[in-house]
Image (cartoon, rainbow, N blue to C red; front, side, top):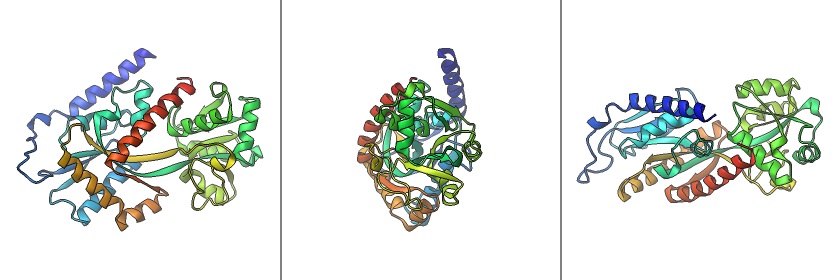
Length: 329
């Protein structure tokens, strides 16, 4: 395993080196010029078309439409390593560059897949969140999250649990947190890993897996159509469109698990640079365009400013460290 992680990190560093050959040619920020004083770069640490890319392009459009800077704004895609390539790239950029982030920044480090920590960057904002659901196939005849946990506490192998695309992600760890809180022996749980959310949905509809932990957006429509049953959500209150589904808190488990996404910049920003980005992201999140985008994508409001984000990330890091230990990694 250690050799695999070493090889993974070596490949990532090669990719990052290839993308950073021009960094020494970039002029340094001058304190005598109004910030930002060069092209603004929004880094999507993934290929075009995905959620991180959509978030980056939404920010770009709102900044342009709301005239939040006089500079040109570009979106740069840096896919690879579950965000690692893009975040390594950001670490070498100027304060006019920001990147989309998520909890993968935390879990990658705790899993030994990355040396990067959230402290290596400047937190700018937490933008929004999705929530994670526990869903059951109709063939399982399960009616609540609490019933699932009772069965698993009695016999951790009694149900098959589907996740995608791998262990250690939010879908997996959210279920680990719920099961641990209920007193289930989580190291004996029977997880089945699928390549994609689509594959997992097909397996759940076909009864090939008893239950699944996945984003609410991936099962909401099927629940409404009666093709499967959402049993619980990790939200702090019932999700719009799933008003018939109780939260884990309502079922006796004191847990809330956001699937958030945010924005961060390079580490050593000045007070003025951080203040600019803090104010800019606040304007982005409170714009009518962002509200429309957020609702269309089934994201919930979860805004935290730069300083609130710093506190939140510190708390989340401790949480992920414990969850990954609980999961047996």
